Image 1 (tube, rainbow, N blue to C red):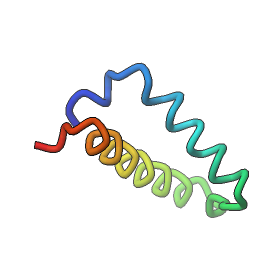
Image 2: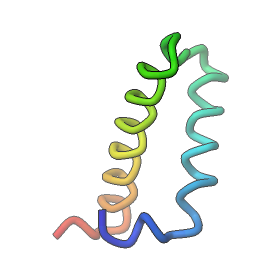
Image 3: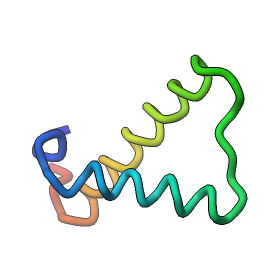
Length: 58
């Protein structure tokens, strides 16, 4: 993802999204491997959302 990997806003945003999901009752699966896979997929989805939101989709 261009631009988002060095964007200082991204890590706090990702942390806030995780807190928000947990606040609404969503839970990560048990086990480190499954948890890591889920968090990587969430990060990719969030990076895509950020790029779309800012119009950086081309």
